[in-house]
Image (cartoon, rainbow, N blue to C red; front, side, top):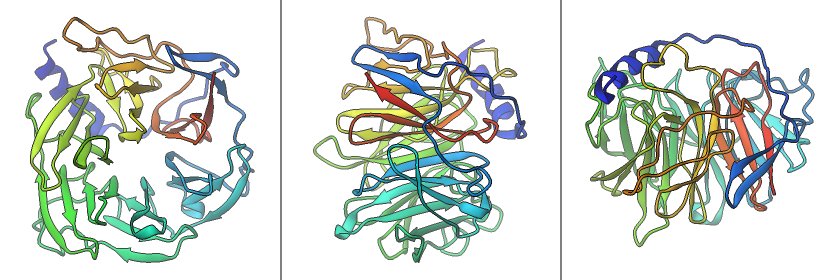
Length: 350
């Protein structure tokens, strides 16, 4: 199946797929996964949370603050946020009663840390303190002139630029990246919905967004999940380039030092679009955007032009990886969607 037809069929399947609860099946506690200099021992028992006190549905995203605390957002309304230490003990929990807590970024502009939370079901993007006090709420896309009444708005991720401006990925809505200033005033939008397999700068699913500060100028880095791509833009929304990672339906981009990481919700062969659940893994790219390790996946292989071959799960450690967090020791934490309410797994670097 050609890439164009494969992606069109895949998009229809993935974007409309209902939630299906499946049974956990991994028994790879203690296994070593990954490749090259990025290999990890799997710790399935890291999380010490009491399920009765701190239940989860889907563990969507996680960040680490300057106090070395791991902060995670869930779509469990009783505790939208769980805060862990690095050994898996729950330090804090709080809720803003978000129905579908999804996006979570750490904002350290202005010398003080805040959280940026997204709830696709209500179109909510808000900035809070680390203990859950709301500081700022961005206007809904239909209330600030960004969208007309017929357009869907369901933001999945938001991030701040060095000057405090916000970039919001409307990944479950109309597929734009919305740019607001630091006070919440709408400036512009870019990207937008595409139904074509190859349409640089537009999206079938703009699932995640990050700020890439590894070069001379900050860039907006976005996930195009359905087309298995990362897209880079200037801060004023000009499309710059794409990296294609065939088979890898990535979640948000995560920058750590010179590395780019992402949780792969699932890997899929062309023509295999009806069997896409429970195939997650993690990818790690170097500064030149070469995949150097794929924990839980096959060892990455590149051709003589640097293009990586099809990326697929190799070991069933994960179900559907929705995010990966890196701590100060280089250990990883994998958050999962549709994984039988599993808490995050820890990958200890070896």
